[in-house]
Amino acid sequence: MKILVVSAHPDPSSMTNALRDVAVAELRAAGHSVRVTDLYAIGWKSEVDRLDFPALPASARLRVPAASGEAFATGSLTQDVVSAQQDLLWADALILAFPLWWFSMPAILKGWIDRVYAFGFAYGVGEHSETRWGDRYGEGTLAGKRAMLVVTAGGWPSHYGPRGINGPIDDLLFPIHHGVLFYPGYDVLPPFVQYRADRTDAATFDEAATALRARMRLLFETPPIPFRRQNGGDYAIPSMELRSDRVKPNLTGFAAHVERPDHGVEHVERPSR
Image (cartoon, rainbow, N blue to C red; front, side, top):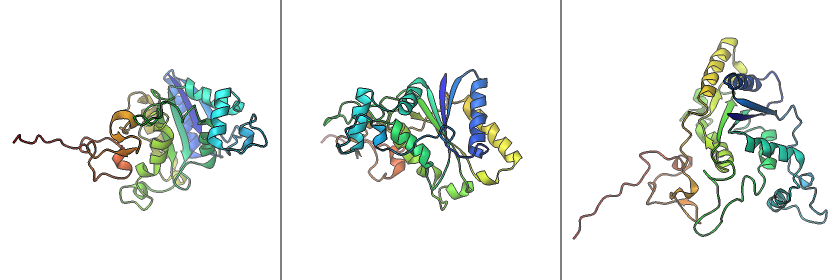
């Protein structure tokens, strides 16, 4: 299989890059074809600006979605973006490796998403009508592929637990899992998270490396997070709210968008009069 690994840490000797290298070595040892993009090493341009749309007239306003869609449709996106899009189309799976900075991904990785996920490529695809709101959230350009996060965090596991002060790790990663990866169609796997990354000794790293190798061996077998598909019937269109006849009305927040056996509405047969 083909795997694209995109990493985002400025220090080549970081825990993030060390774990990335462990994952890459394990995947290649298993016979997979792996491409690695180290965003800091290649000096990735993270900000979206007029330089991304060379065909845009100097007198025109920069409306990013419109400019992005026009550039994608006419083949005038910059070469770095085109190459990254080709890598995404090539890969059967995507791995994003990064440190958790201020409860999210580093700016350079967010900028990679901002620029590579062009209108017409990762969003704005499919039919938009009163009965269907595009090919997204489980459908889209990258449907049928897998994605996984390899994340390093400074805090303890308990800090990111159900009652931890930082909030549950699944909630913190929801915007990336659901919004960045599931949105354009990926099947999203549970993340690999290494806590206390700046206080990891050799023995702890060896344990983490062993666990990550095991995850890589199961990359194409691990069940994905069961996010609800937008066009699967659970959402009313075009309001895009969960339907009360499909999902219990008291379910709200991030967890409501993950399908669980006890989340559905029980339909009780009423006796005839």
